[in-house]
Length: 308
Image 1 (cartoon, rainbow, N blue to C red):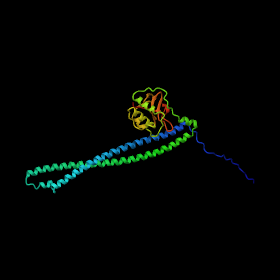
Image 2: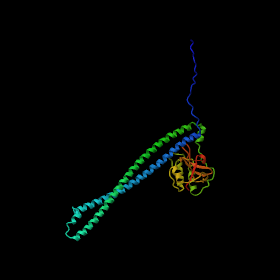
Image 3: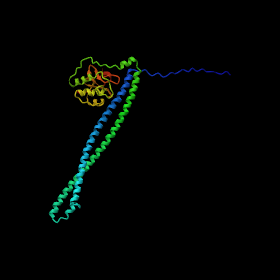
Image 4: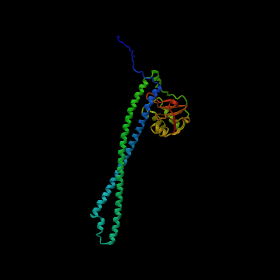
């Protein structure tokens, strides 16, 4: 019986080819970084606020402790003096009086003294309770501070990892695409029609054009998006929170078709913002690798607020 030989052709499978990357993919990767960066900004603000609360509590506790010690010493001294005046107590000594009028007068004085001491004891107890509560609050704030610091450190590590991912995506673009992706437009190209505080904020932002984007930056060498917005309006005499979301919350909400120079525009997820300057243009701090620049309001801004 002849052997039957079956030939099988096996194709050689090479390494899997990655899907081609687009500039939109790279932009999305950097956006992921900025989302976490704003979370870190908020945690840093929380840490700053908690530290301020701790400092205030330390001062309050020191003041309360001084009151506590003063009341304690005064209360202790009155008890000691009573024993020195009459070891058996003033009420007992009255019963040895041979004069009824002296007894009645003395009894009234003792009752008044005991009432005063009762008030002092009650006040002392209230002070002690308040001191205990403030010490408990201080302990809670310190626990909260440590928790937020650890969260911020973990988020910073996350930023680093996501940034490396974004750079890897960027490296997959062609050299020409990379150059275009990292080019910043620092020319406005028209006269901005603004006045008053709106003009002051825009003038400040304009003076920062060309400076680098820096994570957590609030100037003067570089800025992140919310750092630039905060400082620009501070220069105009308007105090804004540090982080994008609270900046939006602090503004009067307007529609995108109501935009005027000096308004603030935001991403819908509150991860990014910039200052509208008119003609459909915005000054913003975009992302690492780029400078503070002029971009189109269609860059991704979908919400707006007015603070001047």
